[in-house]
Image 1: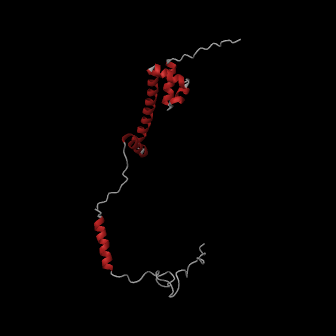
Image 2: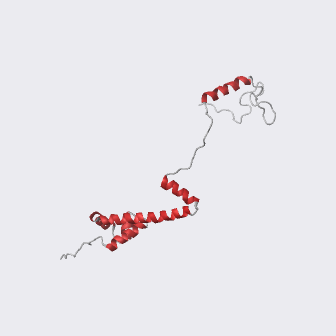
Image 3: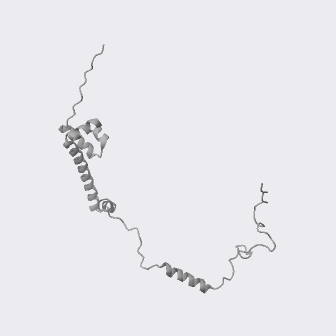
Length: 164
């Protein structure tokens, strides 16, 4: 025999105590499901009363705004009392200030002028005397083969394998 179980849905209302818990949770930076659970509500219940009562969202917004104001006061007090790092952080984050990341050059650089200078240097140099010598003074770095020798003379390569 089947017996029906009494089921009574939980009635959720935006009471003053609940609104204060929502405010306190939002003031501590909680959002979404964490805010709902911290305020003593299931996430579905929080969404339900938020849709039915605009004071729920207002309490959460007010909590976030008050927390931001208190922390801003702390930062400004530190900056005004001489903390340069806090002053820079306020300038960067609140006022969009960015430190210069570039160096000013007072000289105009021309690619064509640089190419002309390089060409003049090549023309004025004439012929190059000799290639630089090795550290062990055995002669120039280029054309260092013995006369009549092959290109593999100083190579570590073995004899090539026959092609199949």
